[in-house]
Length: 222
Ligand code: CDP
Image (cartoon, rainbow, N blue to C red):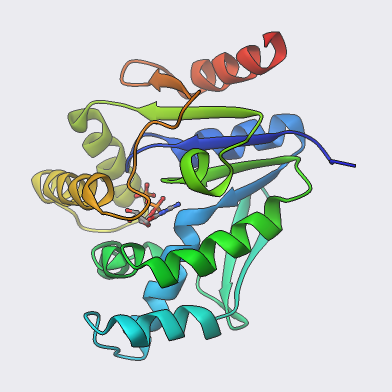
């Protein structure tokens, strides 16, 4: 017996996936799964161990031996790597800018996808990432693809980092997001794209509550 529906949300950086996925999960009393946090977690560990990020074999082995735990905490998630809480550290620019070295490797993705399927196999989940509707749960009950203009996504990420006390430059954030869009959409394995059957939502001019309502309404009515 399934615990509930499987809902996937994909989209580029700053499209609001995490915020929206979290709120939708809360409203449905579902589990929220942030798959980007998992790629960030392995990247964090690779940096800790000073692994050569071009050494594919070593990175794949690292992904295989790393224990990643997503733990519900209040409205969000806490992320643990081998028992250590890395929730804050995996958001640092150094991690963000190096995730692509791992995210492009088939062996790393295989391991992540396996873990993600295990977490979501009983349903009752909102799973968020880049390849969730295309690769991880292609038969999901509902698929959404969130997007927004580059300018708006840059603004959101800038505000988010500033509110956390980071000193950041607007144009640097813009460049970083543009580069990451390119890596995510251009990679050979599991690139970011609109999944078959996904509902596309452009949130450039939408408020968060509006977007959450639109998603819940669609689910109720279809
Ligand atoms: O929060 P933001 O959208 O900036 O990024 P994230 O969702 O935390 O994901 C960080 C990076 O992990 C992405 O830029 C992707 O390269 C990678 N990722 C992926 O390859 N596949 C996923 N399902 C999720 C993230």
